[in-house]
Image (cartoon, rainbow, N blue to C red; front, side, top):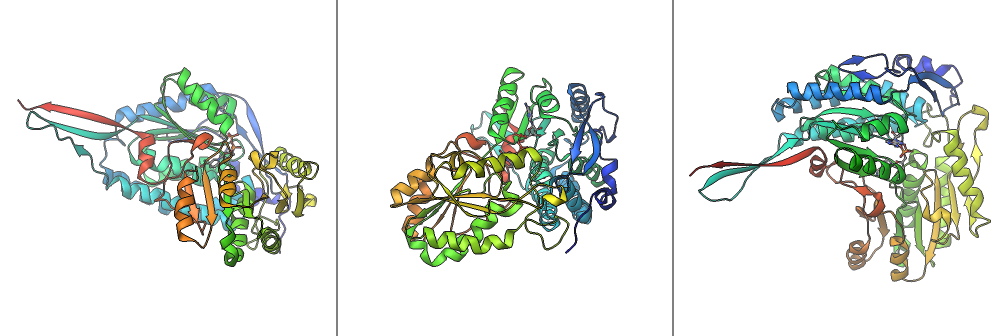
Length: 498
Ligand code: NAD
């Protein structure tokens, strides 16, 4: 097993040194703002090159570039097929740069390289799929009779803004850019402050793929400066945000108080997974899939099933099997191909997770597995896969999004109670259930209040399935044809024939 040492990170990804400035109008430029922010690697606490802290003036410059390119029309006036060719080339170029991108993901967010390679591949698929999809999108002719000819067409919104989080720095970018660019918009992307380099590299690769200068601009910066400036900009026509519910609220408010730009929000979650009494012969699969959902990406996933709501007759058995699979998710060096769980994004988040774990036992629950910070000697931020049992749904660990590898096990005695607990949350991103009874699978999945319901499996990430939340998990949908709704407007055109 290798161990990544300090100082070796930049050697692994030399491009980190130049990925520090805004990418505007087809190239890297000096920021208008003189400020910078520190970029700390969670792998070992190493300080990476400081990054320009873009502010309102940089966002203005990026929006102006996007507006110019939109008005010039080189991109929006291309046929869908021409844009498809570019997006497919973009996907291919991402794949050609897999090792560098996976290394950037590992350095900046502590993601295991193995998972990084998956993220590159899936991001490429998203770009390719939307390229293909836009070439298959037909407009409508309205049935108005012989008095005229009326069409209903989808047109790009114009300048599209995207603000994304750090947990899937490449995929979250691809999920916004693919439908927005495919439908002919020009864009400004504000990546999370923890993961700016990946997004800046994506802008360079987009240009290489043939996305014209000015169509994709990326401004690194902090949320309350660059992010806020983008959300309240008067010349941005739509904003797509992925991140926490609290910031999503601010983005919506900024849109309301500025120019009423179109808003789509992909927010937090506290997703339930119901294990019904009749699922006794599926417990190995339940344990394996739950571990993947809660410990994968070090638990930093919006739709992790962090509340495992188990029939009381199965709870001991489920907890025991989770202990066995947790052994496969011990944190390791993100650059080691064998590592399944990497680092937590930053020291502050590590402390927050440890705070939730520390509060569990005094609150009446008990730690069944894990619960410790590990690998402190590396200087990085790592937490063991943790299973907490005896949780009730009113506890903090059951109500708040922890965003770490921490699973709460809650029990119930009859299906109605299980369903009530599952729905008793302010979130509604995903819900899972495990059952051997087909009728219950239909009946209960109808009642679960979430944007995605998965029965006896966990294959949530498919580009053809819309992804988004009920309740305070968001508004609008990413992925699938429905994502075009975030980035296009419907236009009725009537031509009088009489
Ligand atoms: P965050 O809300 O702190 O930050 C997200 C982005 O918003 C960052 O780019 C940040 O700089 C920016 N931001 C912060 N303050 C801002 C402001 N005042 N105005 C405009 N922008 C601002 O979230 P995070 O910590 O980066 O990511 C974790 C959160 O993202 C979790 O809640 C997770 O559930 C959510 N998430 C949701 C999905 C989904 O599809 N629903 C996917 C991934 C992550």
